[in-house]
Amino acid sequence: MATSALLYPNLTLGEDGHLLFDGLDTVALAEKYGTPLILLSEDRVRAHCRTYREAIEAALPRGSRALYASKALSFRQIYPIVESEGLGADVVSPGELATALSAGFPAERIFFHGNNKTDADLRFALERHVGTIVVDNQEELARVDELAGEVGLCQDILLRITPGIDPHTHAKINTGRIDSKFGSAIETGAAEAITAAALAAPHVDLRGFHCHIGSQIFDATPFLDAAEIMISFIARVRSEHGFTADTLNLGGGFGVRYVAEDPEVDIAAHVRVLGEGIARACEAARLECPRILLEPGRSLVADAAITLYTVGSVKEIPGFRNYVSIDGGMTDNPRYTLYQSKYTMLTANRAADPADFTATIGGRCCESGDLLGEGVAIARPARGDLLAVLTTGAYTYSMASNYNRVCRPPIVIVHDGEDRLAVRRETFDDLMACDL
Ligand SMILES: *Cc1c(COP(=O)(O)O)cnc(C)c1O
Image (cartoon, rainbow, N blue to C red):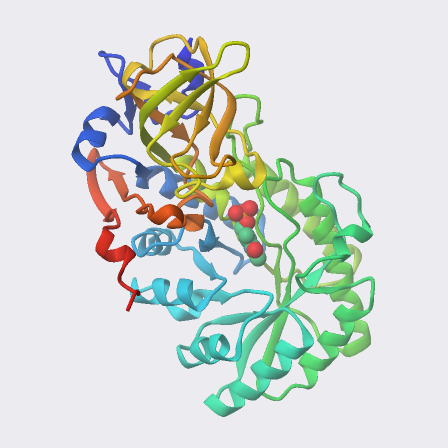
């Protein structure tokens, strides 16, 4: 039955077999707003924020908090939602920073990331009094220090450190992971060198360290490994440089369920395990526990959204496969093209029908790699049917493009049984807005 495709409790079946999203009929929403259409459940985002907040308050030292890694899904209305749930925010570019600030997000609760911030980026952030800059490397440290001096302030910073962990093999020291464009590695001595430089820099205030080990991680062990390595690094810095970090930022990366085979992630349980491990490691190092920051992106928004498409052609190629074409694709969701990411899909206007048809879902672009999935089981669709792709809140709209001059879809937020347009559909005028 197709009902196994209803991965989350906010997805239900209407009496007429339509897929309901937070109780609203997806067929009616597609008619109202057109397709492709992204639906985002505000209640689900808020529930995920609360799960993090409550788990962190219960299990981690005072002052610990979650920061929304907003590269996962950045548009103005998402910022007040996470802000009102008590989270901070991560940005990785001045564009994300400008979006967050224009939505009223408090600058002091924003962390500015990125492996190659330009001087213009840094000046933009410093002049707007961004709370913390997460410094990636020595050249950047020197520029932050100089520019902060010019702007006339002492900037709070964290240093991005590479702990040498492969979250998917659980190998503690995997040289492959030192081979990264991000951060300074502990193993090579780069981490200690940049720490010494930061402590000597007059216009920065080093608060602690940051690491981010990966994404779509389903258990707490790699985070715990990273925390232990970072805590022993903090202890060594204390004994060798007399500096005690007050902040340890462990990055993001908790996984979400895209398909029924993926495990369900119990965030609260993982945060508890992490809290116990951190307390143990700090005690062993005779270190007062720093405040812990976590940076969830995907796990706050991915399973809060679905994308609706209208089915066009259905081609059955005997002896080969079935192609179902839709009115979107890699332009609104490049994840299958980039990573062969798996998705759960269903024919939303006939969601009760058995998923008895195996299809390759093709996008509308002139690019044979423009697919949303292969071997996908859905109820056999026909032209005009509605295809729902689940778990599309993270790294889809934020990675969208205008390839083939396709307009980006709107985002409609559903909250308290009401739908509201949060990002309108792009128009041809938008596409040509920069063309002289
Ligand atoms: C991407 C990123 C995150 C968020 O990762 P998710 O897998 O979306 O949770 C957090 N911190 C940093 C530094 C990142 O680059």
